[in-house]
Amino acid sequence: MIKYFMFLLLVSTQAFARPEISIPASVEISQRELLRLGDIATVEGGSEELLAALDAVVLREDARELLLSQHLESGEILGRMRSALNSQENLRRMNPQFKVPSQVKVSFASTPVSKQEIERKIHNVLKARCQECEYQVSVQSTPRPASKLWDLDYTQLSAKGGFLLPLRDGDQRQIKWISGTIRVSRLTPVTTRLILQGERVQADDLRMSMTDVTFAKDGSLRMEDIQGQLAARSLPVGSTVWASDLKREPAAKKGQVVKALLGDDSFEISVNMMAEDSGFVGDIIKVKNLETQKVLSGLVTEKGVVKLQ
Image 1 (tube, rainbow, N blue to C red):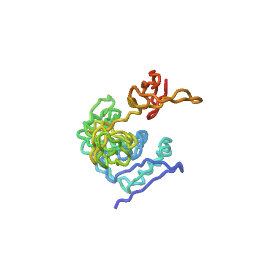
Image 2 (cartoon, rainbow, N blue to C red):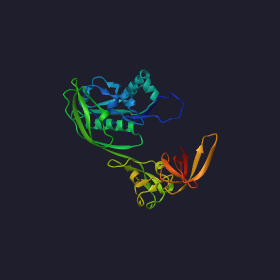
Image 3 (tube, one colour):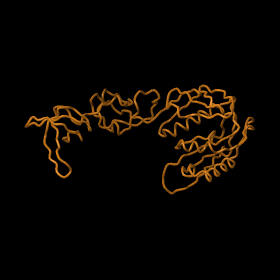
């Protein structure tokens, strides 16, 4: 049975979510001389700044002996972590917690670039960019670098679907490519009952469910984005609700009698007028005085209310 040790550094009594750095009991890495903490760590709730800090922590300065596979004791790993926390102010500020097994078996991949290591690192980067998302990363192919002095450029990494990740090879910085796919799921609203076209959607009509949005054309919505909007089409029970499934209800409709306000904070009068246009909050529409038939312009400020210009 593998024992895990939690290494905590408390720098504040404030309650907040702390990033967690986990080390698996068995891990594969690329064929490189330096073994870094960032090569073997899985990070939850972190940031790209934290990932960079982990890449700066060297666990073994000559990892060539790992060709035969090695077991790292938790004490060695935790000792390096303590040194990093003492020397890196930014790492102390991020205040991570560590989950480390009593022993970690580290082995080199059969290829120069480990698919497992790349998948782990891409997953860490994606989670840093969207902590509420869930990702599945699959690397299809890796290049053969001319040297072991290569690094990865995540700035061009796509958030979902197929990807090509640049690998900068050696001192000449030659670009080679890692290919793969990313599937992403996130919480999205799902209907709990049949909602008919044109019906107003309420909070009780929805529940949040983790949904694969890899190939979704629309962006996923939050519950507060939906409540009160109208269904653009009928939505059966269990349907995922996308932006294209909804339409906003105008705050002022053409032919509707609206309250027209004139004045400022110190003095304001209101009069009923008829909307000559339809508009949402923030739109400028024309309104007509029912007595004089004079047409004026106004800003829609809320449902049924127009501030005259």
